[in-house]
Image (tube, rainbow, N blue to C red; front, side, top):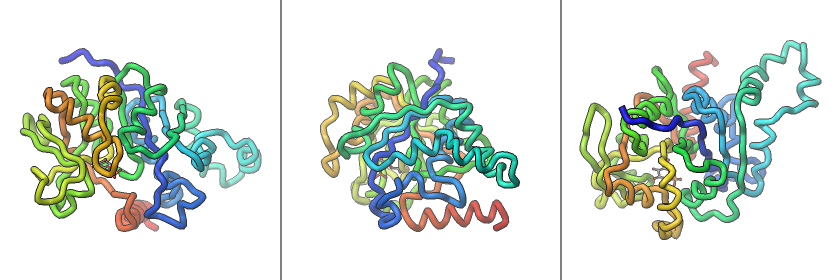
Length: 278
Ligand code: G1P
């Protein structure tokens, strides 16, 4: 087994505008939209905590202060609710606040996911880390998706992206990978392209919003030119690593809801409503 550094930090790029959910996202960050009673980003934080990660590094932007308030104590509310029948509503969030560290940095302008991750460098330092895109809500009957990916990282010591099979006609919504299966559901990635047209997509294997990245990604990102949409793309930076056989793709066990789309958001809501017998 490779000797790998433990993954202790998870980066949450959360500076985007959430235009697809306007007008709801006019004054509320899209990461704070709830699936039932829990904001999207809280699901991601819980998945990271389950993977033994204790520091949540959140890249925010203007208008995102409610994320910081959510992961902080509200003394007024605590005072109001203490020893009432409603106190249990706060149990889960209190556990996160008491057991985790939350750090923040602001991305000044929207220059893409790659730029958001590079902005998080000051919070991460020189160690491997996880990335969660809160829009992608993942559930699993076994261990969480990040835990599955960390197991792979611990074995190989390489960056890992989560992948799933998509309809090829949707390839222009995703980073698409090509590679060879080296063990069941695990690919050594040889090529990755950000949002190719279906005719240019080498496979129907799409990257979803979970990454384990080795810290050399930061210097690579610094030297990565803006790609599609004029933005610095994490997929392009990872392609530099993939050329050296340093990126793996894991077809994870579980299900992912694309809560960045209305359709996925409704599906996730129905899924959790069913679980709760609502
Ligand atoms: C980002 C990534 C893309 C990935 C997707 C997963 O795109 O750039 O490679 O497939 O997340 O959700 P976005 O959805 O931010 O446009």
